[in-house]
Amino acid sequence: MLAATAVLPTVPPPAHALAAVVHPNPYAYYQSLAAHRPFDFDASLGLWVAAGPQALAAVLRHPACGVRPAGATVPAALAKGAAGDWFGALVRMNDGATHAAMKPWLKARLASLHADGATLDRLRDASQAACADAYLAQGDTPTARLDDFVFRQPIYALAAWLGVPSSQWVDVYDDVRTLVAAMAESAKPSPRAEAIARGHRAATALCQRAMRWLDNDAAPGTWLRDTARIAAHDDALDHAALTANVAGLFTQTHDACAGLVANSLRRLARHASPTVIPAIDGRQMLRANLAVAIATVSDVIRLDPPVQNTRRFLHAPAVIGERTLARGDAILVVLAAAPASAGPDDMAWTFGHGAHTCPGRSPASTIAALGVQTILDSEVDLAAIATGTAYHPLGNVRIARFHEEAPAD
Picture 1: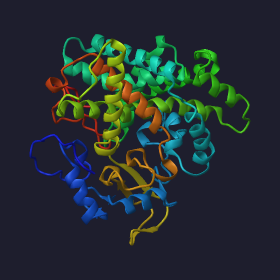
Picture 2: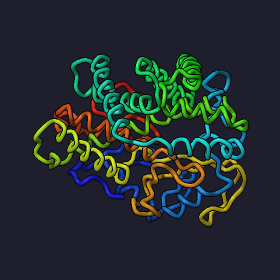
Picture 3: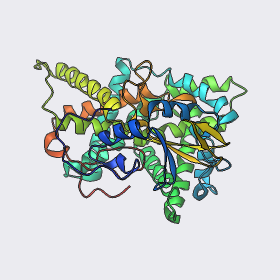
């Protein structure tokens, strides 16, 4: 995988694959890791690390590799509460029968999301609303507003696309952000009780909203209304699981799409101003900015992807890459180490591979492109506010951070 062409500061390579996520330019390290240690045990992390394309594919396809540790579908810190109930129903956090029953159904429904002209107009309006609300939340500091916007905009846009009434977007965003924070907190050695409690309250609120959306609270003629209608005629469908996974669409969007938007803006900031067709009118400028946004998001998916790694856990002993692994072993799957061309049909490793491939590449790309276009349309000076080297302190998602005093996630 190639890094952006802009000149970046010379800094020591990352200490390990987890540190690479927030490194200013980790791709030479990733390339070396894939070439020299495609599948090896990292004693400093206590994890097996898969970095070569063949190793990535082998791990992500292997039937003994699960998305959660055996017997621990729900993080212990979330287990006794609404957030744990919700987490345990998520398709992307389950294997076996639970995954097999819901994943194809949900994948088919997501495939029905189409970005026609009317949809793009709704997403553009939602992105403008996110821009305005970021200003209300952060005031006159451009970098703080940008940090707010890159997380807020994907949630507003997804809500608009699915059919959530606009009066609910702010509350949905707040619930999603709180629940995502609780999930991150649950992975810490000593999670804070109040953060977990807030997560339980947010999970309750978000799932109740999703239940109401599927019970005619969504706008007529929208994805949510169609999904509810189709679900009502499917006796085999677990409706509680459907509600949880509709809520899960938002939590999955929160970090991954924020990374697409933020990393695209940083990429644009580091390069010369894009060449556009001289605008005769505002509509032509909108089209030009959208074209630049689409191309940049596509580049970021290949060259500076948001989801840099994921994990798999051995549910049974297995031999992978000629190495013998025991039940209970954990593998860090370094998606960002795979070359952009290392797969059929322009595979984007950041969306995963195998049974748990994320089906949301197309809607995520569209949402991110509209977010980038909104910032380009605002004519902010990206070179002045978005060229830094900081990233939000996350262990698996690479999200450019613009405000120096941004609070730790």
